[in-house]
Image (cartoon, rainbow, N blue to C red):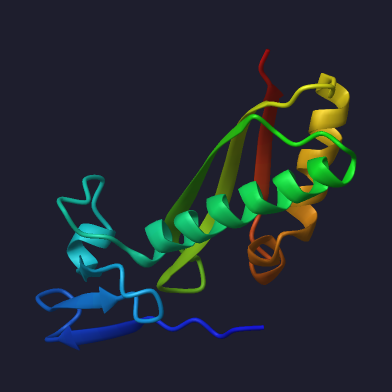
Length: 146
């Protein structure tokens, strides 16, 4: 299996400095990061580790859910997945990811709401990014749409 690479170039102190995250393996882009924007409500054109984790988690979960539904003969017509990753102060000092909320809405012919929820629960437990985030509370809101 492949290894994927990202690179960050950082200049300056935490509060006044900034950096650029390069998605090296894919070459799809370079994105600005800064701690003040990371800790602010508005991102203001910068990304953050939490947003990148949210992107990784939502896409991994969508792929895993699609695979699990497909194994049961129910390829989804569509899955809309959002991951909300929250950065909070850590009582032990610094910051931590205090929780992740995965929200999925799906159109899947031949599956009822209970079957969809069961597959979504299994995807949450088995997608590689969920496994990597063990120790973080991950909440799932899964609803089948007609």
